[in-house]
Image (cartoon, rainbow over all chains, first blue to last red; front, side, top):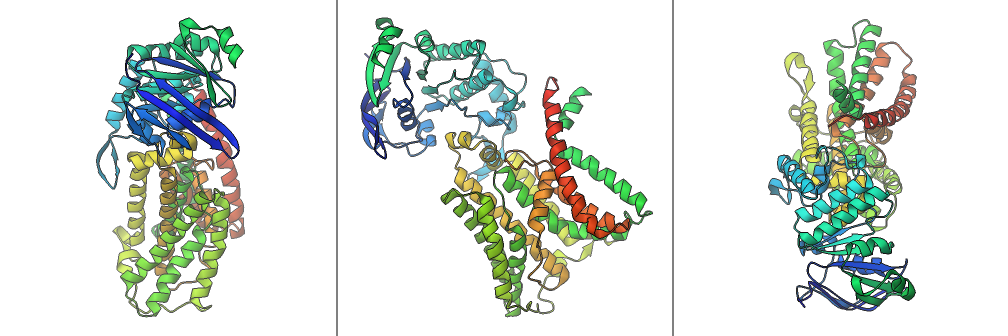
Length: 243
Length: 326
């Protein structure tokens, strides 16, 4: 088997008296679609927050491509190619699609102390292309994100992650609060990632969604990994059993 | 046509512009043509920069999702600091710089306390309103210092220039700041961060924007502009009074809101804030020239503020509802 793209070893996290992650060890391999399931409070979100740089672990180590890393903020994780798409949506509804695609990574024409004039033409052109690449059809990059449906927003978020060539995409409950039709669309996005050689971690409450688009499923309960199997070797019943 | 309508409805500052033009017309008629004569226009344009500069800062800060009630006090403290130093024989440039440095420090303090202790900026800056006002009175010693004659470079800030002596120099400072602020907000990456921070903080944070630094920067810009505006007023009047700028903080918020900024952050334009400030000045002046009891002024501003927010919300909803290809 290929070397893991992300190797998590002995990860620990405490929240004042609650042991949220108990010695979690997990390898994530290139190009696989990993489903992460578990009840509320099982430690999924904590694990994801540490991987995406929003929280720091109390112990253990993370290696990316064999290299130990320590993220102190989300930007560090993004710079290492790990992009997270949160359930609450990482878009600003009062801003245009083009501006949202480039939030925090705006192309500028010359800059003083890191502040410069935006290259708006490039932002527009590249966001149109990025969105078309995920097979999403939107009228204009100048439309406000607030006018898009939930599924379209997830699509734009995925397009953004792909535009910035992320290697690993973490999708935190991307199908929450979506209609059936929109859910199909998002699952389609996740499936398409594999073809683009992007590793994905798909977090969901819904086992059916996980079984539909993942290669491997990891179940967590009480801060520990209680099951780790290929999709073909397990069943929804077995996972419900261990949770 | 429909498309133009949608663009119009989604830009509340344009509604304010139409209202401003309407008011100009009404006051012109009601005052028998005095309102728009050279002398009165000169008077209004002379006062506008002082309120307009404060409104620019407050609007920027509101778009960033925060709030500053201390601008009225900073408006007084900055020139008082300068005046006390001038009276002690310090040359203009260092005294002016010291005043603005105090303003910047207050802005930094407002931002730092608000973010470090996660308290609403309403509270931080309410406290600062009292602190800065008190400091102003204390350093003046109760008696406004006498600014030495010729200590102020009036040619740079307050003399009349242009055709028919229509403008004061302060107007050009105001226009320059307005253009800079507009470019900063709508054309730079910093402006993008400001809008994202005010629009949806969790998203801005998860995209790695240094939101705390962005907010502190906006607090500082807001405070410095208020201090600069107060300094211009003192140069115009020739003497610093510890009471100037009282009530200005709320008028500036009104201006921003009338111009379409949202208290919740993320929405608004610098141009809108300026139009709001112009509306307030026009109403103030127009009521007097129309021989209406000047005590109706606050009533008019009050109604306009509420009316503007209600109308803006309604217009935006109608604009959104229009299904037009954009």
